[in-house]
Image 1 (cartoon, rainbow, N blue to C red):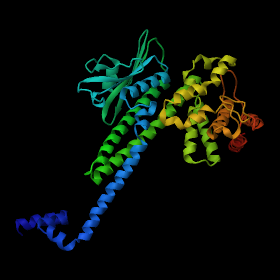
Image 2 (image 1 turned 180 degrees about the vertical axis):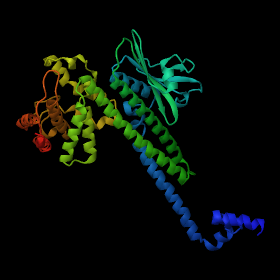
Image 3 (image 1 turned 90 degrees about the horizontal axis):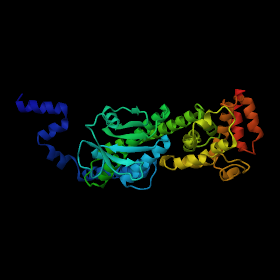
Image 4 (image 1 turned 45 degrees about the horizontal axis):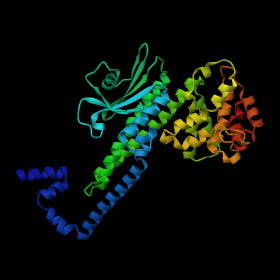
Length: 428
C-alpha cells in the first residue's frame, strides 16, 4: 500500500468526509450528489436557527436588563456612581451602621486606567466622592479581605470595620467596607446577610456583563449558532444563579430580623404556614412563592428597631407597641429599595389590616385587602400565639385555633381561617 493510500485510509477511519475531500471529490459531491434545492434549504435552516436564537436572547436580555440586575438594591438611574452609592446606602440602612464604601478592580470601572489600585465606586457618604486603595497596603483590612478572599471583622476601642470580599468565577471583583464610628458588636446574622448580599451583587454583575456581550452578539451579522447557543447557556445558568442568590438573600434577611427580635425562626415559620395555606387554597406557584417571600419579610421593619424593645420581660408599653405595630411601614421603605422584591410589598404593607376595616395602615376591609396580606395576617397571628415571648408563655394549638375562629370575619378572612383550621385541627 502506498504512503498516500495509508494516509487516506487513516482519514477514512477517522472521518469519511475528510477522506472524500482529500481525494478531491468535494466538488464532485457538491455538483452531482447535492442539489441546489438542498443547499438552499441548508442555508435557510441555518439562518432560521440564528434568528430563533437571537430572538430567544433578546427576550432573556429584556427581562434581565439593568433594572433587574445591578439595580437589585434600588435605584432608577443607569449612572454607575448613582447605582453604587444607592447600594452602599441601602447596605448601611440594613445593617444599621454609620457608612459603607464599595471598591472594584479597575476593569469593572468605566473609564478607569489600568492600575493595581481598587477604585471606590460607591459610598453612603453624602458627597460620594471617588477614591482609591493601594493593593500594597496589606495592613488595610479591606485590602486583606480582597487579597485573602475572606471577611475581615476588625474591632477597635472606638470603631468597627467590616470588610466583605466581592468574588465570583472571574476571580476577585472588589470589596465592600462597612464602618461604625463607635464600638458595637455586629451580630453574626448581619455579617452573614452582608456576605449573601455580596454574592448577590457579584452574580448580578456577572449577569449584566453577559447581557452586554449578548446584545453585541445579537447585533452582529456574522454571529454563529454555536456562539449564540453558548451565550444562551451562560445566560440561563447565570439567571438560575441569580434566582438562588435572591432566595438566600431573603432568607438571610429574615434570619437577621428574627435574631434581633429574639423570635427564633418566627418569620420562617410564618412563611412555611402561609405556603401551606396557599397549597390548601390551590393558588398558583408564582403567587405562592410571592406570599412565601412576604411571610419571610413581614417583620422586616423590625431590623431598624432597638434590641432593647424586644428584650424586656414586661408587656410592651403603648409607645413600644405602637412602634412594633408601625414596623410594616418602615419595612416597606426598605423593600422599595430592593427591586426584585417589589411584588411582595402590598402583602407586607397591608398584613396589619383587619377584615372589618379597623386595622392599619389604611383601614382596608374585606376583599379589598390583598389576598397575600390576608394569608400572612392569619399565619402571623397563629405563629405569634403558639410561640413563647419574653413577657408570656406560649398558647396551645387548640386555644389558638379557638381564638382565631372566634375572630373570623372580624379580624381575619373566614376562608383563610377555615383553611388554617383544616390544616392545624389535627395537631390538638
